[in-house]
Length: 120
Image 1 (spheres, one colour):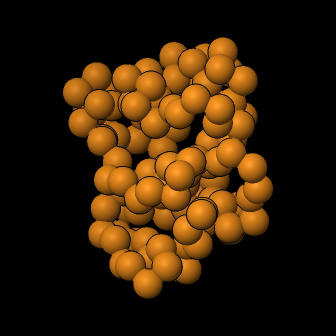
Image 2 (tube, one colour):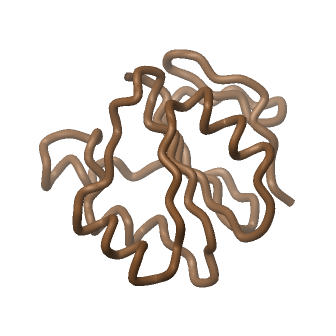
């Protein structure tokens, strides 16, 4: 079952009744996992650019849509390699500031994964 995002503010996201103070990935199975920012940070020096390694970590077979919450101030982007990876796997990617991405997530249907950056 897909968890509902209740609220998000700078530095946190509330999923169901659980307030989380780090970036998260919401899997196809509804699991809430901590984002592995180091996969991108070690390549780009920042977690604001999603690397190919992180894209491979996030991807699950059968995914149709990846919703990326790009932060409260819309800071996160996909690297060209990550964008190509998702395109090659026929996965649509929607990037939006985290508050907007949360709304998109809550309204989405089908095989969807979410990655949400909770700060900038």
